[in-house]
Length: 124
Image 1 (cartoon, rainbow, N blue to C red):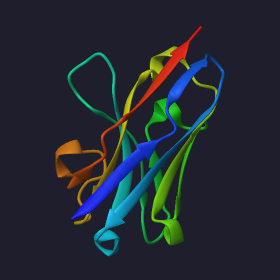
Image 2 (tube, one colour):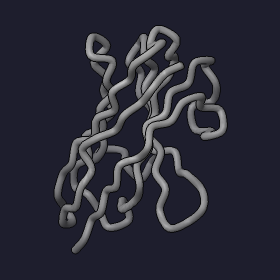
Image 3 (cartoon, rainbow, N blue to C red):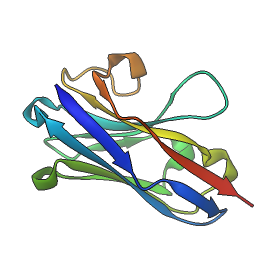
């Protein structure tokens, strides 16, 4: 089992910045990929970004490329999401997720463990 706890959400104005953290505990040695998803008003969770735990290779959706940066601290078993130049459309509940099998990174149903979510609200 892997337990994930997010933190760092909040309310900011457009153009502002936030840094989300996701601390993993338990069988962290089984983690292959860590990712951030978000859920706005719609029913589906949207893939935002992911990082391969061992190599640090990162992937982003086009809408956040150049504004968001995912990173990880292996010693702390923590993944971060640095969000800059935030836009109103970034408003969502942000979830951290962990995959242990090397599955496709953008498919939410392939992830094995999820955090409880942290709210990000961007207002003008």
